[in-house]
Each structure stands twice: as C-alpha cells, then as structure tokens.
Amino acid sequence: MKKYILLGLILSLSVHAEKKTEPVVSHQNIPVTAKEIRYFENEPRYGAYISTNNCSFEVLINDIPVIKHIDSSGSGLAGTYFPLNEWITKKGNQKITIKMTPGFNQDKNTLNSELSSNSAVQVKIVKSAINKTGSSEEEDVRNYSTNKKKRGNNDIFEDAFTFFAEIPYHIETLENAEVLLTDDKDKLQTLEQEVVAKYNKIRDIYMTGSWSTLATIYYNREKRVAKQLYLLPNEIKDRWNEYVFRTNTDITFFDLKSIEDYKMTFYADGKIVCLQKINNEKSSLWGGFKRKGKDNITTTYITLYLYRPKGTKGLEVY
Image 1 (cartoon, rainbow, N blue to C red):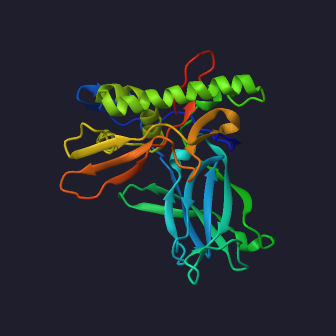
Image 2: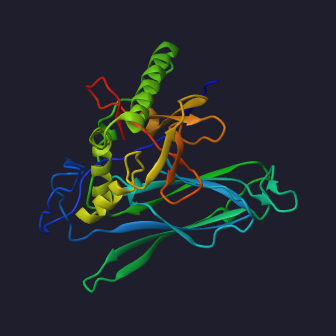
C-alpha cells in the first residue's frame, strides 16, 4: 500500500563573521563539515515557547514538519522551548503552521475523537543573542494562540502565522533544487523506485558500510546545519558523535528494518521527498540499537529527506 502526500519545505546556506578560522573537524580522518566557517558579529537565535491544553499538535516551519507532540497523559505542555534556527534559511518572513488534533482522554485512556472546546495551543516566538558579557538576552518577537480563532468541534484545526527573522546567512540548497512532485503517474512510479533504491543504499551503508562512507552521505547536511546554528568546531564534532552507527564502541547491537509498508511524502512544494511508515508517519529508515551495559533495545527513526539539485540526475540527502 502506497500513498502520495504533498506538504512543503525549504532551506539553504551560509555562516559566521570575522573570528579566527578554525581547523576542519574530522572523524577517523574524514572531514565532516565545512573547511572553514565564517563567524558573524551578530548571530541571532530564534526559538518558540509552546504551551498546550487538551490537544496534540504539529508545527511546521516554512512547511517543514519540525515539532510533533502526541498528548499521552492529558497534562499538556507548559512553555516548553524549541529552537528554530535549523529550519530558517534566510532573512525575512517565516511561516509557522499549527495543526491541532484531539488530546488524551484520561477516563478512557485513549485519544479523544474530536477536539474539545478548551483545546488550545499557544506559541511565543523569541529572539536571543549572546551579549559582550557572555549572557543571553531574549526578546519577544510574536505571540500566537488558537484560542483567538473561530473553529468548530472537529478532529483537526489548522492555522498559520508569520514572524520576521533577522539572520545573517542565506541557505540556497532548495532554491536550486528540482520539483520532484508530478501528476505523471509513470514519472512518479520511476521516482518512487529511485527513492526506495536510495533508502536501501543508505540502509546498506549503516548495516555493512564504513563510517567514512556514512560521513560522505551526510556531509552537506551537517555543513548546512553548522551554518544555521553557528556551530563551533567542538560542537560540530559533538553532532557527529551523536550519529548512532554499528561500529560505535558503545553499541553492542544494531539493526535497521527493511524498507516496506511506506508512503511517499513530498515537502517544499514538491522539492523534497521521503518515505514514511504508514502506521505512524515516521521515517521508513528505522530499527533499534543497544548500548553497552543496557538491557533494553532503543528504537530509532532516521529522518531522511532527499532532493535533486538542478541539472543533476541523482538524489542527495538534505
């Protein structure tokens, strides 16, 4: 069973001004990020404080699904902070889409079938920057609440708002990507075969390949994120150390399941494609691992977005 969904997504590239250029960070002699990072004097960071009442929700930034919360207790969130820079690609208005769905029914120990009259999501967008003393100064940018919107009792409520982000970088990756979504069923079927083959190739790297091959696959993504988050070399290295890989010295068990029971999903006006499991809409590249000294296997879902740069034939990891 397969299904096609269009959502949307964007992102791009650049970073830091006039500090001393740091050396390349490497893992087993494999470069894992940009050869040099430019540091900016002004490096604003954006985030969202989210509070909820009697609901589950999903947040998309510039049509990228980045936050998904399933209410499993009925307690809700009380000003939980989520960083946003990784999903901001250039200076200007950023679109935030809120999808609110029913919350948890404690009496029935399951999710409600409909939203309640008191179901709500509040979002406060903030901007922060490190000042000369090393402390962080935070200012409010935008406040939003679903309480102010008219809606009936149904199983989903969707709305959107924007905020202006003053950032110094410009990521152009998807501005230079082809539109993959098409109404041509034959082309769509061909694309699906290509996407599945790419997923299987990357799965094989995780299962039998080397760390250097894995680093090559994710190099451009990590370089982009380092620019968006203004990461220092040690922070870049920390991100790479977080990659779960079967050759990690503290991993005693590692396995990824076969790519099956999926739906093909599009983002960024059809420029990004991914495979999601039909039963939970999480990545089809998934499995489990066990760390040394631990008895339980941890389930892991490896997010894998693919795009095609204009003028090329292959799919690349975004």
